[in-house]
Image 1 (cartoon, rainbow over the protein chains, first blue to last red):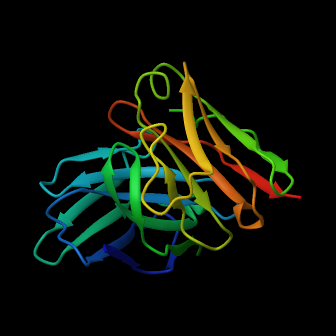
Image 2: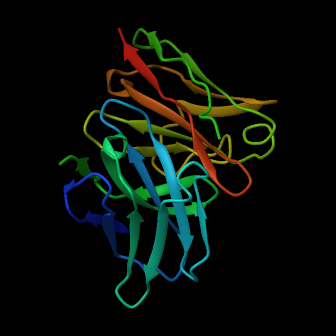
Length: 117
Length: 109
């Protein structure tokens, strides 16, 4: 069974870049799509974007100018970078495996990232 | 893009049935048979309950069912149980990206 684990700083300063990595175990990253989703405290889910192992990406139009998702098949990892963060980017960030359009079948446990000086 | 529209809350007694609606547009829910539903308990990651409008992943009870008509998808939970109390989110493919609903809190009375 695929397992995912997010890692990265829990605190980021405003205007800086948020960077997270998701490590995949129990399966190869060289299949499937790999997704990032976030959830501000007390609010709903927001899809950030996804990447195919080949490197092709799709991003939420509202975040597209600030988001980069990349994959490292040698490490079985994929990563998220979100630039120019503000307090509105404070959220629990989840990584997930996406079998097909909108089907996130395995999720990481989530990691809280707080944007604050 | 706008989030899909869900009622903020629904409730039902044990054994009853409840239906949660999810309204989008012809560019998302109405345009593709790629609607999924997620259950989220407090402090936990979401769990896939329904995909492709009405299919259930292995291990999801058949009390959970999904359907779609036009731009509105629905999740029905029959034979409500206490452990069904959670937040539920719909999700739809929208051409090149994915959009979630705002979420519905289900209370089991």
